[in-house]
Image 1: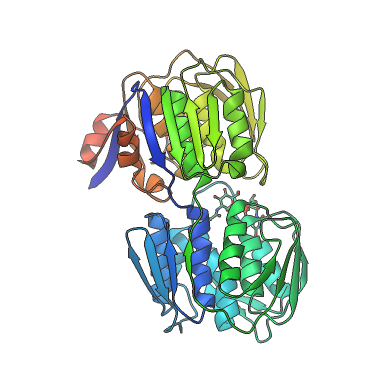
Image 2: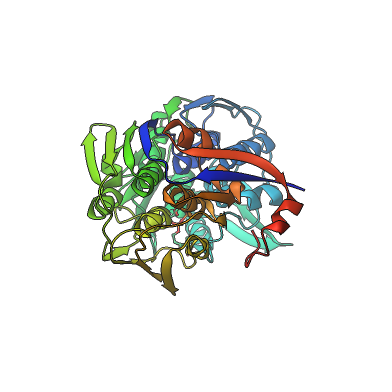
Length: 435
Ligand code: UD1
């Protein structure tokens, strides 16, 4: 069997400009929301990712026509008819749950199974289902399927126990075509929610406060299609900054939204990187020695993003002193740490806390991505390490980065993606964990 690997030659300073790709976490719910429209939706700046292709497959399965050409998706909802998402598509990614709200809004029925996605500890969907119940949806389980029916989908006052991003988005998408008003409190405030709200409002929805703690939605009878440009990806942007912080050099990111990245940029600054911001550009000068950051705590937006935790961890591996990270959003988000240890990092994990003691340098190693951002963190670490690294588990990277290898090489990195046959892998010795 063949497996693709990325050979990364470390120690090359990164220099140049990158235009930030469209946001995965915005494109996916917006694609799902397009089924709420009665006319065609044209989406620009949609990143070419396996998760996006999975969303496109689900739309096509439901009877819509979704065509992707480069970074533009054209979605025609005319043929929508199917009310069940196949189990294989549900398992393909966590964001398959994003179809729940729009399917109930549009079709008043939705049959699905538990979503898959990165294994970051338990990722239940109880908040999504509880909110749908409050909006008049009957939910029952049969033969492993979750069967949701909404004879009368109505607005409701929904206080979320925790600000879940996905639940906030599902509630908004269900509410736009529901009867009456929905008021959602303790809503998640991630910028991608504001982007979803802006898209839906452009289609004729009446949403106020998307991206804030209280969201109000007045249901309307129908939405029309529109043409919309997906916002830039703040986590992909942060990834390239971290790659440059690890490897050294100077980088300019174009098309970023610095105000959405304040907490992560301030931590990079604290680690000794010089940053410059001018409108939609972020400049990083990675020439200075890196310093430890005493304490980083992941939090819902506007706190430090859990999706950036592994990335900053890779930077801090070679920072002078000891840094501490506390992961409060997901239970199990340190799967990449074992791989960083193979590169010579000094990290101790206890429960949700990681203590990173900086070492003078990392060395290249044979490592495997266990999840999307952990995989990107390994690539950043490899960019700054001495010698060559082999990164496996590339399907994880392909879920979130549009042309990772090409982008990395365009700024002076040296990475080669290649297929190898699996028997070669055995020569590298047994792995502790299945990749
Ligand atoms: C989204 C992002 C993901 C990011 C995460 C947190 C997308 C496609 N994915 O994921 O990249 O890491 O936000 O910023 O936008 N929870 C429950 N019950 C639920 C739902 C969530 O207990 O029904 C818990 C989760 O287990 C987790 C926390 O709430 O501990 C936050 O999860 P949530 O904000 O829902 O994350 P996602 O929407 O899955």
